[in-house]
Amino acid sequence: MPFTLPPLSRRGFLRGSFAAAAASCLGPLAVRGLHAASAQADPHRFALLSDTHIAADRSETARDTNMAANLEAVVRDVIARSERAGAVLVNGDCAFRDGQKGDYVVFTELLEPLRAAGMPVHLTMGNHDARENFREVVGEARLRPSLMADREVALVRGERAHWLLVDSSTQPMGAGRMGREQLELIARLLDENADRPVIVYGHHNPEDGMSKYPLEDTKEFFAVLAPRRQVKAYIFGHSHRWEIGRHGSGIHLVNLPPTAYVFTDGRPNGWVEAVVQADGLSLELHTLAKAHRQNGEKQRLRWRS
Ligand SMILES: [Fe+2]
Image (cartoon, rainbow, N blue to C red; front, side, top):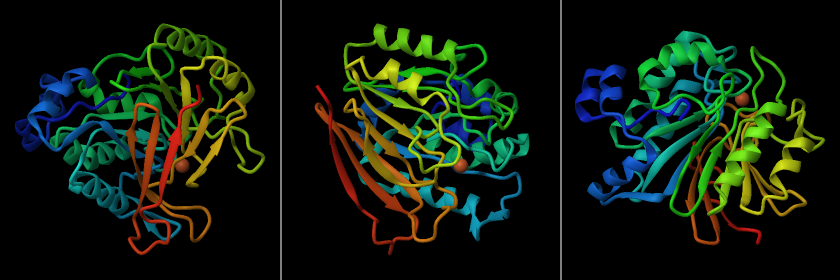
């Protein structure tokens, strides 16, 4: 499981030690036992975050936004929900600009309350991340190695759907591209896990004619996803733009808002609460500015057959 930070034991949290966390390491399946112990946690409910852009200096700002304060507020909000998410998924651009080790130190510190509350955190890499630096900082907290040597690919198995975490980032600071080797792996993983719906989760947005740096091999990527009917949605970040769309194949396209800054004034930042249903996905937007007109906006996606 790449970059999955397991829930922290209370003791591990208090000691602030990732080594302690590793010793109490629980994968997503094992975590179900934890849900049973916590009446509030819902295994079908997920907190979806993206583009946190955390800097080593917590006071760093960009576009009049303090990114650390934003992530802190989102973390508080996720924990405060009366129906608590079973897991958290952060969809890349965890680091500020170029994936400095200090960025990841602060980033993982800011995530600690989630893990202390029993939620594993699954992460993908964005174009502003540096895999090797992250690996070094997170170290022993990783649950298992990636399914691919030079990318971070994972399958998080769920009761109603699997989450396939893919790595669209070529690094350092490269273009968004899955690449042939990963596409072959994605095809194989999908074929081997066709027993239930699959939600694909990766950083880059598909080519849509609007965003500047989309996934370069969008066509090849969807040539793998579209014929595999178990694929129901592709969820991404990168453009810092909350938006729902649909591919011609019927695959839902969900563009997550950033927890950090937006590129266009008035667009929402915050996080998305997702509940996997038997026949689709319910989404609710939680904006950082509680007075934002889109706060609480709900979407109900039905799976293609
Ligand atoms: Fe970003």
